[in-house]
Image 1 (tube, rainbow, N blue to C red):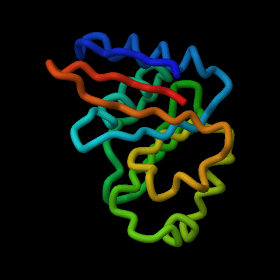
Image 2 (image 1 turned 135 degrees about the vertical axis):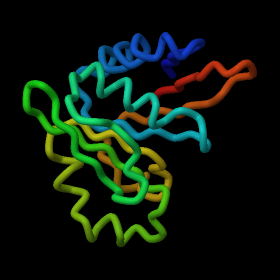
Image 3 (image 1 turned 180 degrees about the horizontal axis):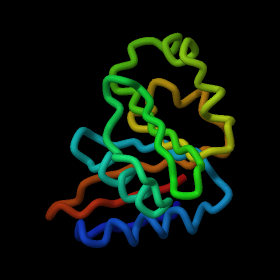
Length: 138
């Protein structure tokens, strides 16, 4: 299982570039980790690497945010923390996003793990003693 270590917040953009480089063909990334692990912060770094021109913040209450890169492509950022039933995900048409061919970054994917596409990149973020973040990738 590949790992990326972020031992300092100053290295987060390098880690984001490394993840995107390792998975050039994949477009859907699901981020697992406890509250405060840095999921949103890492997605912000990914969006910087993809030249997103919009403000990137957590879609906790809206479920999905759509951002645009300089080249015009759309990038989708999901937060399923407040989802109580899988039917809520079906109701907003997740397939249109997940199978769009655009980047999709998902926070709190635990409830929807069984409907993720087979080629989804699963990233578990853990906090080491001292504050370093370890990204374990499947």
